[in-house]
Length: 582
Image (cartoon, rainbow, N blue to C red; front, side, top):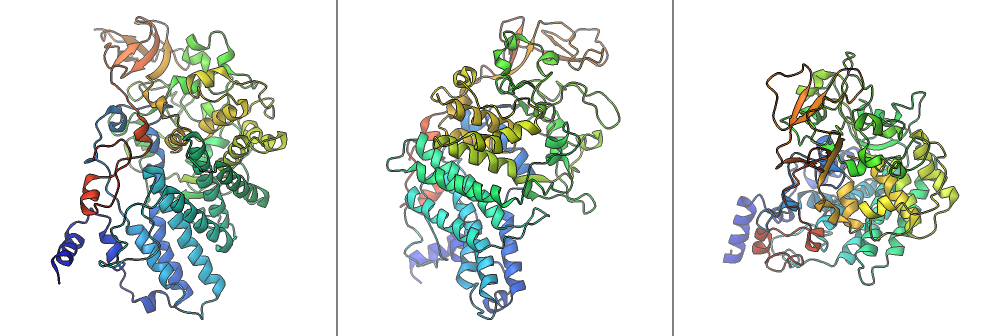
């Protein structure tokens, strides 16, 4: 064995952090290839291993820490200037190699019906499309591997393939999945079906089309991708397989999607499923209601302002919207607001009133979307509500946005999508298309957008999908991530040393002070304004500003992540993404 091969072998054995090991070793499977692919049941068992690449519950509800609509306990490293190429994530191709190995062997037994073989191949190609979509969102150009590689394979140490080639390959994979995976609806929301593949295609193509449009990629042909997105969404919508969750209790319909133990399969296509009797739990209630465990994540005032009033008018058209106190601003709004944050007469299961808890939230807009209402779960990793990964509402939004970006959205499209979502949210005149661009949305979030319909679709997308892990990807594809530099903003505070009753139950909840008083009022949280980590925007009154002295920076290079330095040492042919140091 020559020196090069000895070194490679050592890398494969020792460097478990490197992606290359996964391209060169057999799958960790005790079955021989003949056994593993000999029956339909074995094919099913093999593709079951792919599902581990999907996000789990925490991977979804903790994903929006770095956005322009949330307020966390600390500024993420990526926008505080603390990330270097040495700190960047290490690539892993283990999932990809497992998929490619399957695709090289699934046809081994021709006695298995071709339809079944193609079904399982479709699932494999769904997951390969999903894998590369995640990678391209992060890194842009990526080496495309469609086969397993040996240590002497000349393709092992190649440079990245162009984004266009990779995404065309992703499109081919997801189209194969759509055409071959079984169309049977899965009411458990745990299996890839034709409908799940269509939903993923609508997501992938919307991302790619808008990314190419707003980043002005030469010869990017964004119209092709937007058309593909709209077509995939339309096929799913017209199938009638899914609908928006609606019951007799419209004040709970939206939130029930995120607190139900069993996925609400009328709307949820795919979910991270949890189960109390099996003790399959997660920590959402603890994470969102703890002063120490989670990021103390709340929503930002600038985003709260985008929720429409119940009559369909813009909240920001109110003359006093900027100085309205919490207990007043949350009244008569889009019903999704009261199902996303603590407000009004919200109570725990024991009947205890539960206003925003300033030992947990830094903004006052405390997220309750995923939290079970029983206090028991606030201090335990025992939440058992299933967490949606894909749901019908997103498909409606994908369709509306793709059509709006193409300049083709009409009243029927609007009613089918944005109108339907607003109807569920209890908004009057829900079908009305905007007559003019919302200057608040323009000035605060999207200064380069003048199209009233695109602005309105973006409003709806932000609200409907809040804290579901979409927002940073949306900012990237819209080239709007400069929003991440804006200050974290909380509720309006009329003055220091006042006792504020946020839920109007006759008992004060919080007071904003320079110093905690010697004699405290029972039940009141005293929030110290230290004029460093916390400030009031007008000195003694105004909006609560959190970490306003911490520099936040987002440069154009950050739309693509850096490639870890060790990856480039292992493979010198890899190119670093533009703007990052060698």
